[in-house]
Amino acid sequence: MAWLKARIPVDFDRLRDLTNEPVPGHLKRWWFALGGIPAYLFLVQIATGVLLMLYYVPEPGRAYDSVRHISSEVGFGWWLRSLHKWSASGMIVAVCLHTLRVFFTGAYRKPRELTWVIGCCLFFATLMAGLSGYSLVYEQLSYWGATVTSNLAGALPWIGGFLARLIRGGEEVGAATLTRFFVVHVAIVPAVIMLLVALHIVLVRVHGMTELKFKNATSEPRFFPFIPDHLLTELAIALILMIVLNVLTVLAPAGLGERANPQVTPEHIRPEWYFYFAFRWLKLTSLKVGVLGTGAAALLMVLWPAVDVGLKRLSPRRELSIAFGVAAVLVVVVFTIWEALV
Ligand code: HEM
Image (cartoon, rainbow, N blue to C red; front, side):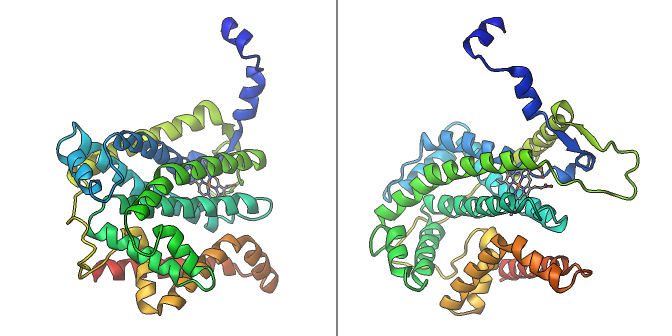
């Protein structure tokens, strides 16, 4: 330690003080500690993704075969690929649950509006990771998924044409599109997520977590130490998740559909489950209304702390935000189930 302290002249006691924040008592209930789960699953994504990259070839003629090679010939390749796929879904579920917890406990209110906005960007970046990753497999659904994505971008007013060409790397989905999705998936999105998580955690640390009070929690301490108490809770959650992910991986390994064929449009184009609700909404409306409506919903989510202030002024005693949140969750769940059943 003396050798290390001489080479890294940092005051470790002060560093411990800065990182070991007192955590509010309600975080003894693990479901309030959901913020750590997406962070943990992101690490799983990075570890499995780097190993998959050793074999994946981002070229239209070879991408599909390289995925098949990983799934059937590379030692434990099927396991890595399936773990990557399941933890991607898990990360999206975890981010959604964390968002709901923050929303329904009002933890986005003053002074945590920026923490919320950065959280929203993390939410969109996580969806972007899923979208770009799905297209890399180069099976029929991923190829046509990329085509639909670029067509949707093309429906935006003013910048649509430019955006569609930017995504495709030309007029058609092809080699340049795959390269772009690959770069977005393995470099841009992970870098953005790392930066945003760092900012997010710094803000959470600076403000401290919102203290929630429960009627039946008289035996709970008001605060408890982050290290080791909360860290151990997070580690226990991570271990349980690792077991769950492995069980899912063994019971339902990632499959492989038909090879992409730009000449044949599949009868049913379908995105990953986390885009079902947006897909159903698009089917119910016209292309333009669908795209603009989705954009408006995303903007509403980002601006919610300000909207909430307006709603509170309108009706100080009624929790209009809660009513709105319940309605929004119901719409998303109903649209998702509807699309899944079709
Ligand atoms: C990769 C995604 C994310 C990670 C790793 C993450 C991480 C965390 C962590 C560790 C906390 C501490 C409290 C807890 O564990 O619940 C936290 C709190 C918070 N997060 Fe996130 N988060 C993510 C996404 C989001 C999203 C999508 C939102 C909202 C749109 C959000 C909004 C907030 C807010 C407002 C707090 C403060 C809560 C409080 O004071 O009680 N986060 N986040």
